[in-house]
Length: 280
Image 1 (cartoon, rainbow, N blue to C red):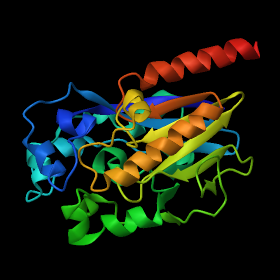
Image 2 (image 1 turned 135 degrees about the horizontal axis):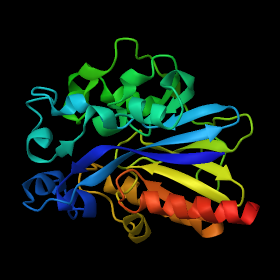
Image 3 (image 1 turned 180 degrees about the vertical axis):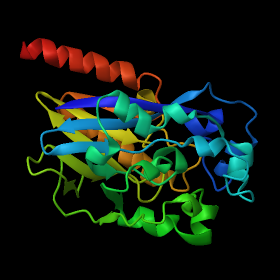
Image 4 (image 1 turned 180 degrees about the horizontal axis):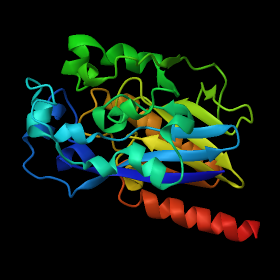
């Protein structure tokens, strides 16, 4: 089993979105008013080459995001809080082909959440089973979904995902989980905080655990520090999720891979090189 990082363009956000913006109901407004931007951050999706079939975790962004009118015009976040750069050849479909795979060969697509930089590449996977948490889908639809920062108007017409409801089966410190593979080595975990229905994917490979974290935090260090991002409307829940991730990682060797951490790719490559060396 091998995990590949696929960068589908880059995104810059406000520094307070990445590092948090303090307590209180005005924290999201404080984030938008921040004049300081991050450097361009990677928009990462993941390919898991699994014996039971190819698994894609998140689909990254689409080059359509650069077209005028793509973003909901009345949502202030898209006007004041986001700068993206994506070329057509950076979309996940062409990059899968460059790795020797076709999107048609992907068995499962797991979405950590439905923000456009994680679901923008959905159009490449009409033949795959797509999984998203029940709560995430409920909060992303309609006008309320648009107000929360989702873009349901751009989902493919055929989009009818499998709605993930978690089983009351503990996985380390997580009280619920959903096993995806028959081998039991790929498990979906509820990690609410960034969004209410956010999930992460735990991949157990040899002597390590690869934790595909989506936007549970923007960097590994922010997870270790327990800092909720600046756009969550539930920082208490976000911090509880980060505590559970730290507890899980404290009991076994864990490679933590958030989708916008500039160090995620090097951590993955280093871990896989070490695993290959041990195998040999």
